[in-house]
Image (cartoon, rainbow, N blue to C red; front, side, top):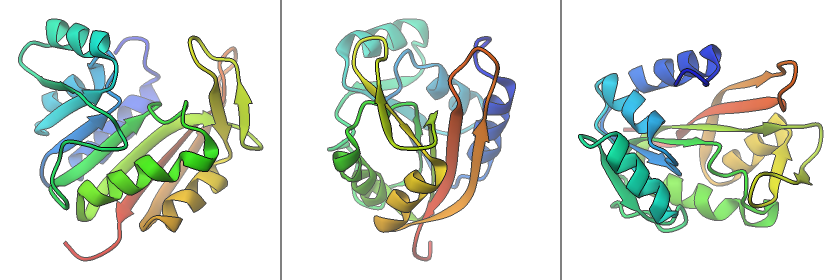
Length: 179
């Protein structure tokens, strides 16, 4: 977590403290956010489609729950979780298909459940070269509209630019409906 920006840690901590019920760290990668959530008392499980990431996460955080899975078909019952964290896990989804994992997050969240999304921010939706696969930048407003279109209420948005790093965006949203 030492490489994570302090404002990101604070944002995720504040979001986690607001959750009721367990959470899914969707696209957990090396598992550090799953561990972070668990340390805050959230019953969190990490899901990633890359078996090597899950294997590494299990090795690094053996007391945490990690599964190989797809963000478009989560292994969770409808309306069963209190929160979904998607921290930079949607950056490789093509803009015309981003609604698929967003619908899935909506499906598994209880009414009133929390979603927190972190992503690369930009003035327009734009594809760019990134490590292994191309990624996409999103204006906070455009990503917010995608969330609203699938049944989320946007609670707050964040944008940050740090010298030497790509601009960052984050959106906290809640699944519409009463808990």
